[in-house]
Image 1 (tube, rainbow, N blue to C red):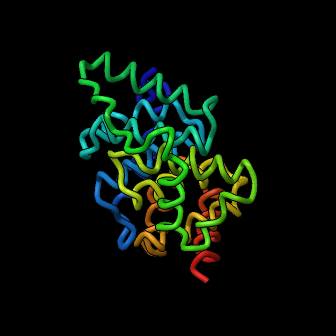
Image 2 (image 1 turned 60 degrees about the vertical axis):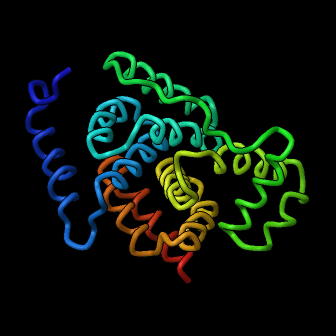
Length: 227
């Protein structure tokens, strides 16, 4: 459906806001690749499959490659669950096939089933600090978090830790109701060099896709993390 035909006045204002006003706001700009990395993660976080499909070509034009897009989707499994991640993986795979875009190889894992816990804890420590050395011992969920979320995904090639923390921030801010985790990951971002100013820019660029309430909540969490 072409919204320029069915909903001309709406799409005129939305596109002006999202693709002109927001993009060009002074002191709130991001480079194109980072911007679309955040937008794709945000659209996954809010369940926006149709908007995600619209954004895929723009993301590729901005410099994201297929492997990076797939890494964003894979990591969503831990923050949204397989049930909400799968439609986006199917959408991306279908889009790449329809447009004859070559799939990357699958050799991006850097851990094994034997060392994933150890390597996951190392990633947690690098992001959040030495206290994470013992965190996995608190219970089986904490152990799963270290081995599965960090050992299986954060350690993969394709995105660095700073980029992975940014997309996690986007997953959490977009789905809402995760403010304690959002504050923790805002702090993790800052530890990785994604400072308060950068995170505020991420929120600004993603606001058209998640609206004002969740964007304002995200800014509040950034401020709490910075304290």
